[in-house]
Amino acid sequence: MVGQGSGGGVGQSMVLAPPASPPNPVALAQARIKELETGFRAWLAKQSMAVEAAVVTATNAAQGAAIGGLLGTLTSDVSSALPASTPNAAGLNPEAIASLKNAQALAGGPLVQARNFAVMAGANAGISSVMKRIRGVEDVQSSMVAAFGSGALFSLVSGMGGPNQAANAVTSGLFFALFQGGLFMVGQKFSSPPAEEVYYSQTRGMLTCLGLQKYEKNFKKGLLTDSTLPLLTDSALRDVNIPPGPRLLILDHIHSDPELTKGR
Image (cartoon, rainbow, N blue to C red; front, side, top):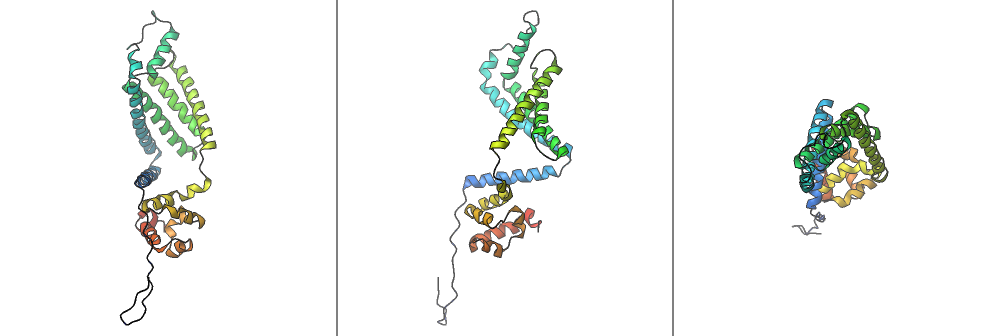
């Protein structure tokens, strides 16, 4: 837009940037959750191995207990049909007693299932965090070790199997480990994101918070990865064809984020 000055001269041109589109509430909430999760993981990484294992075990056990309690509520009709206590050996042979124990463990009420799932989820997550700290990598071997531990503890707590609890724990642990190892390999093969996506996760979250998701392609075109965020300048954003208004919002967001400014 061109305006006339008071002395009859022509004033400077003023270019108004188009207003940014309002952020999607769902995407905004997802970005916020992702940001909190990233911050929580960063905090855990700074703690000792024992503290990390304890926190991870407790949080995942609580999640497992909630899931198990819900499943136990849904299967309450099945568990109510089972005897409350295991008959003695005079009435049933050992194989029948073992089968009944397995059924009670798999179809117990909310409290039983909450306990079982808490043990499985908590043990698996805790052992995984320890293995990752020791080995420095999260791979199929670490996943199988964690699954073995969770399977063995599940067997001991739930009472599944026959009278030989040690053998049952080893058998259950091996089954869990093989199953988890297979899932891990399949997941790696079919669910791996494009390699370049990991370099723009923080950028994507920032743009989502600002309602500027459509400029993600500009960042990728200019190779402005997450590691370059603390170094961004107005000229760098201008070079990738981002308009003035969004440039101001992006720079203001970076300057007000302590995690990014300390990287300068």
